[in-house]
Image: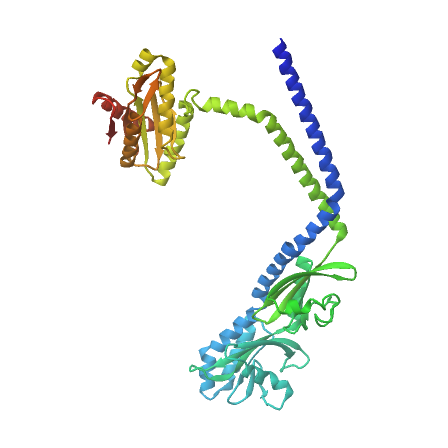
Length: 491
């Protein structure tokens, strides 16, 4: 009765500790979370926008630019490499109507606002509507041609925004591509143009889709393209808040910054578009009220997770030790500590299936202590238990982590050897037999010699697991019949 009372007091004390510890944990968690949630959550979301959300949006827009705006570069490249254009030019530009028809087909097929070719030999400006003019080095409007002609050898094209030669009232984004003959000699410039309005519509589409401000600048920081709703300055250097960041933006292929504009935090991500030699700028303004709501939600979610983990941890502290004792009792042999037969059979079948799938060998050893009954009868069961423990320790000391030792019967042990073939298993069995035979127990001044007989078998497809054990058992029987203290293989 006294023992029951003491156990009851222990249980009650444990319960009080559990309640107090849980209460303190909940109280501290709510107090700390309430005190720092606003600032921490606000900073966390800001970091998320700057380092994750905004760069991801920038990457998406860049991918769409490659599809939408880089297409004219691809078209111009095809025109510059076109055999017809080069052959026609080298044949002294005979029948100009053929080239005009070619340019018209390019314009219609790819839906460009213009397509053109300027010959270095004649300086004629061929257009999809005909021969417009002759390029002259004294004409300011023709300076673009001589600029493209003078590009370094490594640069084959340029992109510029200029008035359309065919219609000076229209502003066009031109892709001017150098043309070379078959020996690498410069013979002219070809290309296509996109209407600025079309490019602006693409920028407007990006802004609406991603709810960001999108614009382009050149390598000097001048804003080259933007949507109709753009209300910023004409350059990064003259933009409020960006004066100090412009140099860092223009000297890095990609960058992420934040700055203050009109009392709000603006997150900026820049990325150089090498084909255009322009910078893609994507901006997002901070929205404090929206952030607070979102942060509160995430804060509560994290708090719930922490509390749940705390409860589970405390519960495990109380119940874990009992569970572990039950697991050990259910899975191991009480005397030797080796796996019991029930657990072994489950693991054995799983290991066998893995071996079949991976095409790896698997072997088993069936170990029997010689004349064990005589030991029990002569020296008592306590000595017999000592012999069992000794053999178990000797076997376990030479096994790998993946190997399994099971007490199969009274004095029988079964060793499972994954990824080991018959010859290597036989070598291991011989080491077992030798180390055990050399171990001599001394009990009350009496020396007790221990030997074992071992049967070895390797799994052979497609035999059942039971047949593998039977073959090992047959080999063990043969070892006993041959005089014991032997290793016999069943091949």
